[in-house]
Image (cartoon, rainbow, N blue to C red; front, side, top):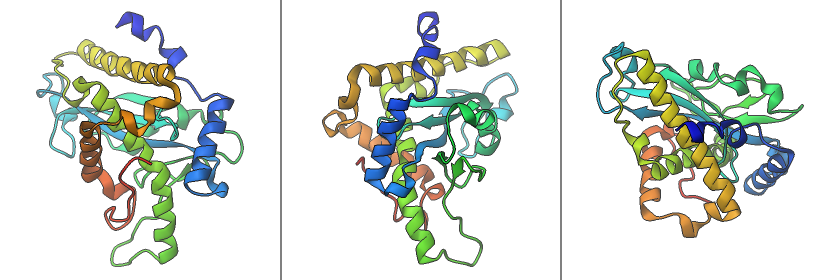
Amino acid sequence: MIAILSLHDEMISPPTDEEKAEAKRWVKKQVCEAWENGYLSVDGTTFNLFQKPGHHGETFFDRKSNYSLSAQITTLPHNLKIVDYGLGHTGSVHDLSAFCDTAIYQTPEKFFTAGEWLWGDSAYPVSPTCVLPFKRVPNQALTRQQRHFNYHLSRVQIRSKHAIGLLKIRFQSLKELCIQINCSQQIDYAISWIRCCFILHNFIIRIEGQDHNSRNNINRDWQLELDELLADGIEDVGDDNGKDMPVNLP
């Protein structure tokens, strides 16, 4: 783990100008030229623990009735590379609170120039660098234009779920961490384990290059994992509980 963690800053960092350009070309192709500056996507996920922690265990209990650690993951949509993340919060913490502790929220100038932004779902704060879908209000449907906007936004934002699905398929331990947490040092160990998976995820992308995300490399298990993720949290991204949401990889 120490050797892998030593590669952290090399493997996970704000995107280069070349990576920005590639991501913007992808967004332009998927949606439209006017949206190409929205070249990043963010989403939250949880990493389940195999048992209730003995160290403040109730704080790990999440909305899905699991004990877990939460993460915020910001990715490039064209290749699913992780460029920023937040780790350390327990599963009970809301995405908004966890996101406020990330580098991309606290120091956006490291990731964005004027007019650039990332896409999020309705859990995130609206800001000049974070664009969200329209959210329905009680007893009022979205307009046709709002549904249209949300659908096309989801074509980019869904890539965060693709990245999370791919991460959990590659590193099966992330589906259920078999790490006992009875003290703060064991929390640190679990976080380091997850961080190693993030580093290796980006390392694989670097080695495989543009071929890593081809349909030929996506097996049936990966698609099933993606379907499970979408069914679990799709209401946050599209409209009408995701019925207009793009599901399969582009």
